[in-house]
Length: 220
Image (cartoon, rainbow, N blue to C red):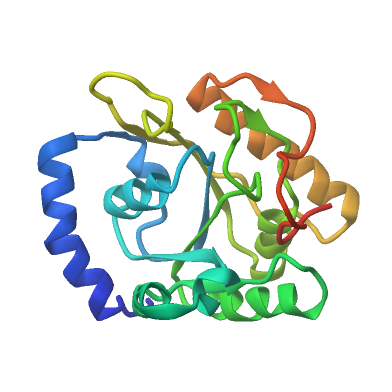
């Protein structure tokens, strides 16, 4: 079992307690998250709040893949951002491709094999319009390499355009087994993963990658 970073634990006890008391997120399906073995948590991505609610509702510590720009932010605000993401135990993901992307895999695999949870948003970026976009294969390839299951998660109520009082819900679905390394199998597992996420969220599905200013990690 992996150790929980101190900042993560403190945040859960302070900000986490406040958020849970104010927002009272509805959580279902926690029985699908392995109690003491590795797994990849795969959710839809509506807003920056998804990381917060996923981390606060998961039954144990979650290591997030975070875009590398957070670790290179400039100025005073950037220094604070770097300290927070590093202190939370996040793994930097360079969306430029090549060896830089493989470094994220190198960091995540030991965590998963040691029984930890790693969270990945398979769309690769936030949805620009609330719809669910085609999944990139990074999560499935990581599962194949670490030989751990993929847990689909549907998050609702965090949309930036949401009006009125938000009712946030986080639904964990039955896990998919790790695929083989064959490209076709990885792609099929990714498509099934997104189908299961859609069944949890009810979002309209778009059979194309979400637009992003640069290539997202794990895309194919």
